[in-house]
Length: 190
Ligand SMILES: Nc1ncnc2c1ncn2[C@@H]1O[C@H](COP(=O)(O)OP(=O)(O)OP(=O)(O)O)[C@@H](O)[C@H]1O
Ligand SMILES: [Mg+2]
Image (cartoon, rainbow, N blue to C red):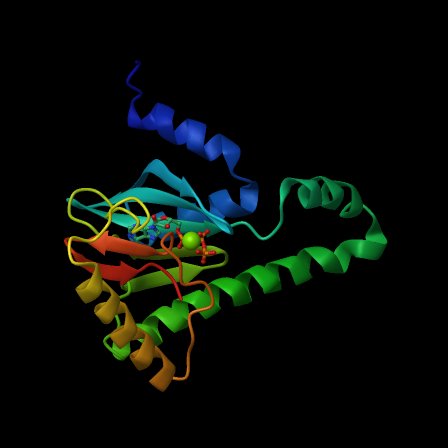
């Protein structure tokens, strides 16, 4: 196995991002929300999740993918057509609204004392949040069964009630979206 330097790793990571993403990441770095992207954690359903260093700690950088590759290819063609100039703007508005929604929901959930990662900031289609875990991200519930499932379930129910009282419902509560952090739990998204 070869060990890559940070510069090499970031070059590799950076190479896969489009310019808009690179600019957004650079801006967040300059504003000190994180130091460096360290490694990809997971390709989620709607986002790519990265670990980033921040001082001595780690934060999560979640980059939303609004479109799949096919759409991307179509978009590459269509954006050169002056009749479709509006699409670029529109696409970004959708991305922004999507990311902002997740950010705001996390803040709301946190205020209601629900177990969610702390939302740190968002910009365009990139969300920065607290990493659930100590030195590494906590495992998903699907991979780490709780020692006391009854209690674990009770904790989830309790939070779902709080969420409902807050006027929100979790649209995708699954063992993929619940992390088992030291036999307590946290939901990684709402
Ligand atoms: N704050 C966090 N701390 C630790 N691990 C995280 C955190 N956020 C995300 N992860 C890990 O990355 C995975 C993907 O993240 P997430 O579920 O937020 O994205 P997604 O699946 O693309 O979106 P969604 O579930 O909203 O459709 C999670 O299942 C979890 O394992
Ligand atoms: Mg998920």
